[in-house]
Image 1 (cartoon, rainbow, N blue to C red):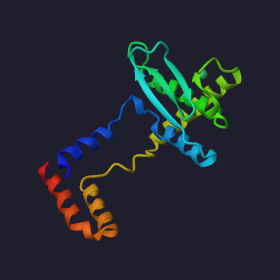
Image 2: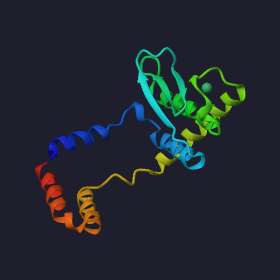
Image 3: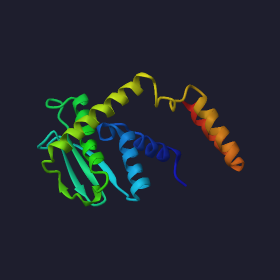
Image 4: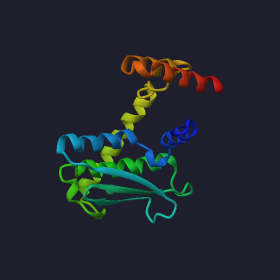
Length: 177
Ligand SMILES: [Zn+2]
């Protein structure tokens, strides 16, 4: 059986938020739509490299693409990084009907595609900015005690046989804090 401390370390590792998951909801949504509407499995992976030659580049392969963003605060700030990323996502949106046929480094695209990608970036960030102001997407943050009560209630309904063990665990851990 795995130790609670190992499970905790793994969960915390997967909960990390960093530059590599900026715009994560949008990326997930693009992948989901390609799956639902086109029945293709496509993975968009972001990496941040301190030695990247360009502010942003994209490498396409059949089952996905790597978006490489320069990770150098002297050359690109966080907001610009989001704009660059949103722009690259715009290229994916533009090519959504045949994205799996693109391979290799992104090359110079048509003016039409570039313009589409910049407009997409603008509308996307505008919307997310508005959502943020209106508190959308923050509902999942649990208030004090709410997390514990909610988990215990969900388990009680779904797996009543585990109710006592989970309740004991959750409140045991909470009271150690
Ligand atoms: Zn572009």
